[in-house]
Length: 187
Image (cartoon, rainbow, N blue to C red; front, side, top):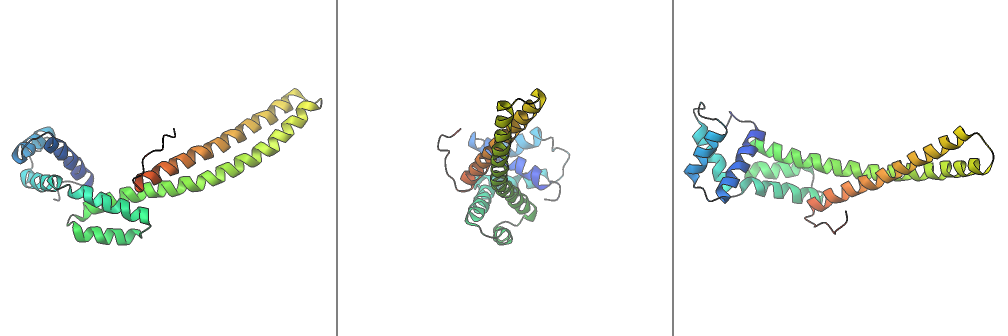
């Protein structure tokens, strides 16, 4: 399948699945995809689409996604996951695309979890320092601009602390995705 890159193949795969779920037959799906994606000029379009549709019928690439998801949730090393996928799918480009996409998402989760702790700690420390400083300046007669400066920095520290909670929620939601957990109603 040299004519398509992995992303194109995934788009065709998903379109084929939608058409198959809408009760179109294999030949109808081939025809509709050729028309929709204007693949009339490609010599081997039908055979390539036939292979992709065969995989869509069996949810083959979704099964690969589940293997990657489960492996990353269990902490299996990335190279082992890819080796297992290579044994199941001959199209290495698609395997790389699927594995790399999920690995990128797992990296975002790890970064968000690390950011959560850092942002909360820095925000808490800033709120403590600048809140105390602003309170002292408001009780003693000092320059009005200085009072507002300290209060403004306190508010920025609060926003930093709050962004730590947002990063934590992002990490939690991605973790739920990898572990097939449903959202517990938290917004």
